[in-house]
View 1 (cartoon, helix red, strand yellow):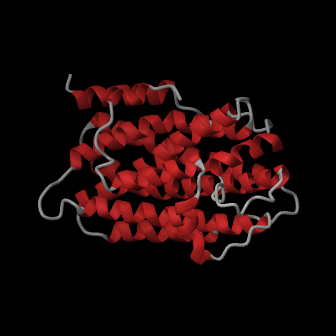
View 2: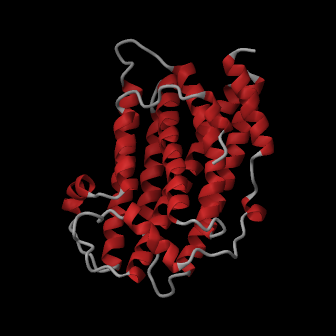
Length: 301
């Protein structure tokens, strides 16, 4: 069996044996504690290492991290919801039965993820009575405009590489999110531990499939650089949107920083999670979607 056919067979099998139903598989009554949220702050906070957060106590660190979780979950949910349209287009034109089967699994899983994140966001927000909700309209607008631009761009191969490079980047962020949460919060039964662990279980397969699609659509020629350039610019735009929301989050806990200082903060932060994601962005421009080992799809997050 050819390597691509073998990988697709494995991905289809794993989507049947390892996929999950968030409505029933997640214990929605199991909350993450305030102390557990606060424990994530040193790994995740934009202001770590800048001195601007010197007066944050554990209660405000926990509030900051709750908003951070909402922020990343909202970005991921929006991206996956809009990506379903692109996957449906691929499903309609694909003649390979194993590949079309996996695209069907992919779409189902993305729809489940969107529901899971939105329910989790509601529960996290409910744990902060009296606190304003994170302004989400700008995130929705950014993703809607981005995918509108992608759909209107001529060239099927270009659109495919652009979207799957971007998907692969965000899915790799999810895998590192899962690792970070598990390393900082040993108790596995908490809400955000469960959400990111279940999500990572599917995303490990999605990363392998993205790599397969990118390899099938890789092109050369004088415009061979264009899809990656578009993916890089999109990734940077989403990262800026995500971190701009953190300035709003900072104001909720007493840290007031003008938006003009955001690039400085992104360069100065010492939070391992932030620095890893910035490195992932850089890898998009250095061939970061080169093929990974196919057995990544078999990994148990």
